[in-house]
Every structure is written in structure tokens, then in C-alpha cells.
Image (cartoon, rainbow, N blue to C red):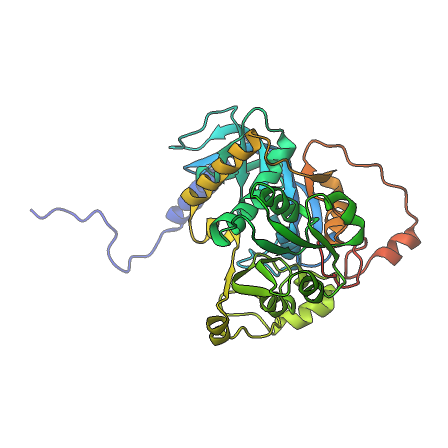
Length: 427
């Protein structure tokens, strides 16, 4: 006798009783899920600096967000100090490469204590002192970072110094020793000599005998760097002409963080066999948010990079003149090109130099998360001498009360405290 098919025949009509039972089961399941969610403890929150949209300083908010969940191979760090640099300004204005869509937690570097380890994470223990490079998300009380971007911090290095070592000193070391191959008796043109990376480059130059440094800086920074710069130039002077007065042949190395029209001027001042290295583009950072975006909108490239007007570099002329042009971008090297082992070897060398007293970070100021706008404005205006840091545990500075009229006057497209004049060459 054939078995009876348990399934309803094709085309059979659902009964009212069956519909009611299915509906009751669905509602019961929903109620159970809601009860479980209500019984579960709420996710723990942390304080972080969030970019809510591209533009002025008022687009940055300090918010409470759920603590990050660790993925496999990640390290959870309780941040003690966080570094600020020009890429943070470029991120805020939306002119950095591969930028995620806001809202997002800002920040690329931090120092702190290991709080937890993800599955299969090796090389670290809870309680280790570490520094880290993060692909965003570093300006938070807790930062989840792949172990490949985390480095142990010796006990004799403060949190503040540790937060200066990665973006600044790794960049400086690779530029000078791996790309430029700095040697005894050579000469360098260094733009923005008083900034965070500039100070790191000056210290590393002093480890090589008989290096001549032509450094450009704002006048108020000259006193702080005069002992490390052979020929100190104001950022407003014609540095090509000034260098030619001292050295008719020019310089061996140009380290340029400005870009724009300074590119070909830098190449022009190179000696034969000289190297021009671009490692930044601070000329693109401007307070004129609206006018900049109108300009940048038409210049988006297919790979999501914004470019700006520079004179073309003629490769045949480089060939004829025996000159080299190169570039360096640490974030891309780490997070797009995966050169983690190479960077780790550089960090080891930097730690050894710190241990022997050859380098000591210059720190301009330390700000609470709530005061990040003031720190960022100082960096934007090139008023910092050395590195600007954030401290997640620092209490914000008391703010004077403002009248409603003043708040309305300060509001606007550039975000209140941010000035609207364009950035100047310098640091």
C-alpha cells in the first residue's frame, strides 16, 4: 500500500485554524525575543570623537558609542593618549583617500593598555603597554586594532611620548634612511620644520654627521628649532633663492609636506643625484569649506582620491638632470599595501634610538576629547610647535558662557571656531 504523503496537496487551501496557529506562533516567538532583549544587560558605552559629516569643526562631536567587539586577531586597547596630525584635518574635510562615509570615529594612532584579546591573537597579553596605528577609530576610550598594527611600548616611554612615535617618527625614519638614504655631508630642504614630523626629522638628522638643514617655519617657531636647523628660513620667503645664496648647486634632498606649486620648485633646487620626496599635502587643507568643496567636487578621481592643480613633472627632464622623485604615505603602506613586517622593523629601530636618548618627541599640547576643536584649530593655523595630543581621561577646560547672539554669530558653514582664511605654507 503506498505511503500517504504528509505534505498538503498542491493547491490546497490554508484553513483559518492553521492561519491563527501560525500567527500565534509568530507572536509568541517575537515576544520571547523581546523578553530576552529586555533581560540582557545594555551594551557598555565608551566616549569617543565622532565625525558626523565632512566640513568644519562643528561636525565633530564627542559621543557615547557601544564598546567595540573584538574580531579574530585583534587587540582591545584602553587609550591613554592619542595623536593628532594633518591627516585628521584632511579626514574632517573629506579629502583623504578611501574615506568612509560619516558618521565615523576619528583618529589614527594611540598609546594605551591591552584590555582584551580577540580569538587567536598572539604576541600580546592583557595589561601590556602598547602603541598602535589604527585605520580610523583611535580617538576613543577603547580601540580595537589588528595585532599587526600594535607594538609594545617599553616601561621607560611615557604614554605621551608613545603616542608621538608612530605617525611622526616612522614617517621621518623611512623618509630619511630608507628612501633618501641620508649620508654624511649631505644637505636637506625641510618644509614645516617646527611641526610634529618636522621635529622628528630634525632629531634624526642630528644622528648623521655633518648634515646641513635648510628649514622653513613660521617666525614664532624659529626659537624652538634654531639649534637643529643650519639655515632657518621664514615660510614666506623665496626659499629657492635663499638656498642658492648659500649653495649654488642646491641640496641633496627635499622633504615636502606641502605639495601644490611647491612640487616643481622643490625639484628645481635639487643637486644632480638629488631626491625630492613628497610625504604630505598640507596646502590642500583650508578653512574655506564651501569654496574648497565646490573645487574638489569636479576633481574626484576613479579611485576616490581628490587631486589638485600642480605643474606636471617631466620624466625626461628628471632623466636628463639625474634627479629622482618619490612619495611616502604611511597609512596606505600599512592598511592598503600590507607592509606590516617592514613597519614593525622600523618601529624596533625607533624604540632603540629612544632607549639610547637619540630622539625625544616634542609635545606642543594635550587636549581633552571635548576640546578637540581647539587642538585641531591650532594645528590648522600652524601654531603648534611639535605634536598635539588628546587625552581621553582629561577633564575639559571650562568654557566661558556665551550669549545667544554670539553663538548665532559664530555659527555657520565653517563650524564656529574655525577661521575661514586659507592655510598658508608652513606647518
